[in-house]
Length: 341
Image (cartoon, rainbow, N blue to C red; front, side):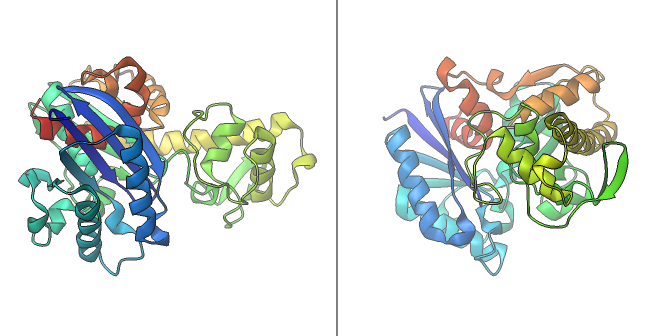
């Protein structure tokens, strides 16, 4: 326990935590945390993570949860999330970007450095391990893109707003993104038609119907609070087109799912291409994949004819923890940075 550090990524939809002992990632976990419903959900998620990862004397925290709409501002959110983590964990350090790991007492004055800086922790670790690379972390809700070279992070943006303006934050993910966010008009069975602007289905449904959804990735209720079989997902997708499941064969819904996935993949690939061109990385600079959607990162890397590296290959990690460590990359990163390895 003396050598253990727990890294925490306190998000608005998920909590991610990782345990590093003697410079090695031994375990990591992702837990649903609907923070928009109240701070007790964050407390409960931290309790569950501690029960699964075990105790530690040192804790390093990064966050995106300050964006939850229970807070009137991001500054209020940083203060509240920091206070909740301090009350639960005790001795914590808070990741403040270029300011490094700071004490909770510094959070009120450094809140702009702290807010939504989890991607920067992962990018810093990537920059320490690789001469040149483009980090792409595709999660349940968002995609982070960060080019690194010569030990430096070449991203133009730091805040979410700046990153959105520079293609470095793409607000799309493989689980929670509503299908209606992908397109308002789409081709279905040789016919162009509108897509309903209703929360009837998410991209988790598309990936499930296509047989690509990682088994442990979708831990929130479905849009209709019903089942999560491929047939259930196809039924929700059909509703997006004003149809019933029975109105078309299963192959048609698989093609529709493939169309949605192709649109999302193209969006991310286009943003990555723009970032790569702007950063002028070597054509052989690899793409590093992190998050529950890193299978998609690998597909995009192949499309762009670049080598692919899994985030779990950047740090020493127990074999059994490789998958969860890659999903929880920011939590791993702050733990590793706090460990000084």
